[in-house]
Image 1 (cartoon, one colour):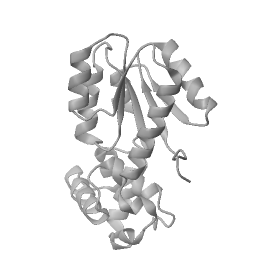
Image 2: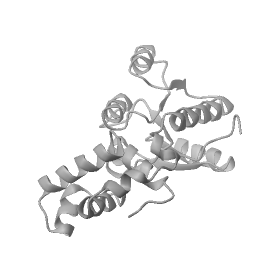
Image 3: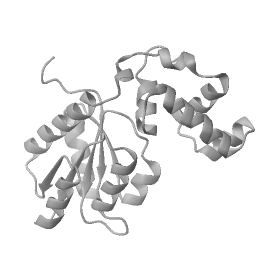
Length: 206
């Protein structure tokens, strides 16, 4: 249906607990899932990429700043749109963020309706640019070898290469080789795409 909100999640990365709670309540009131993170470190270590998704990112945070997290996302999960939230009229940061592909930049205190609308648009944008297999084509999974299927299960479960290697009794280098083969056969370019493609396919084959 035109204008409908795609299923997805919003990640709120802000060191202000009051702001996080408020945003969680706002998105919950419109039936949208949201996850909150108190720091950039917490987000990068614990966020599990799923698509479609949108990241609301505070600009100024201790230790790891919003722009630094944006750079990390661009390198690993480029399809995930980022909306910067700032309590300061930081024009240079806004310009740099937009040039580097940020979806939008909203200054606090922001207009809630505008934030909701931009979040909706970001999720639609992400959904529209998801890999073709997210539409339900599972044929690629039948091309995987039994060992590649084992590795794929570990990736989808959020396990690191070291844990997968220990579980399967193989080396980390072998896991990396199998993972590269899985991504090649699935025509994906990041773990986020691979997980999304696997989870959104009706017949997973694994």
